[in-house]
Length: 150
Image (tube, rainbow, N blue to C red; front, side, top):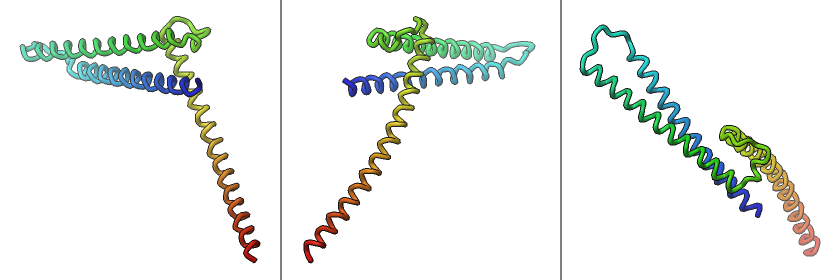
């Protein structure tokens, strides 16, 4: 059961990271396009056909980025809703707002990362301790063999 929960949480974390990366990429692309549009929005006395085509192209590009951004947000909301439906116990006391739920999931992931760090440190200590015990036992066996051969 615990392994299933860990695998499920890992899967959720991976999906969440993918969605966050998609959102970040879309936000960056949108920012770049907005900056590009701002740079080109210089007062012009008379617009030519090619300038107006460029503006139309930029508007279309911006509309396309906005659509992608909306789709990505919709996917994130759907993923959050799916997790809420499958694991309502994770969201006890959390409101229905997607942002609250996402913040809560991120908090869970951060807490798990901290726990993983503690467990890894404990494991390292235990491994070191066991290695020392193995060396000590090997020395004892070697000593016993020497005594028996005398």
